[in-house]
Image 1 (cartoon, rainbow, N blue to C red):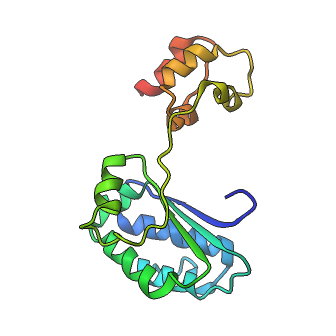
Image 2: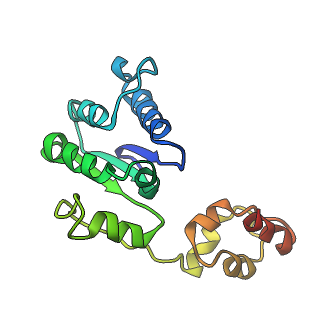
Length: 178
């Protein structure tokens, strides 16, 4: 998304209204459309309709990350997304990226034949674990024991992101134990 016109939305385990409010706030911050202000909470359909009316000079990338949390709060979300894609977005200069950390859920709820979104996918990427040769790029402090940290995170990008590196590897491990 670097140097691209983009909107990144990280869904949370909060209720659907909180997620809608967050997405609406992200859109308002970027486009300053008065209808998106906090005065009124819209629904998914309205939000994506507003996005479809934007006059885009270049492709807009919309990323919905941790998609599974939207499903937890609304099992009908794939149907809503299919509707807004078919009615508002498919002929626009918009790329919609759906991602999640639960591969079985993505396969079942997004990619499977019985899902409302089936047939609308134009590509997919199955991210692999981080290779050791790139692992050092995540750390500013070059004095860390990369082999120990690499084994601690299991090559998983999210674990690398939340890792609090301590001088003592045992202290770093506590990051994951809560």
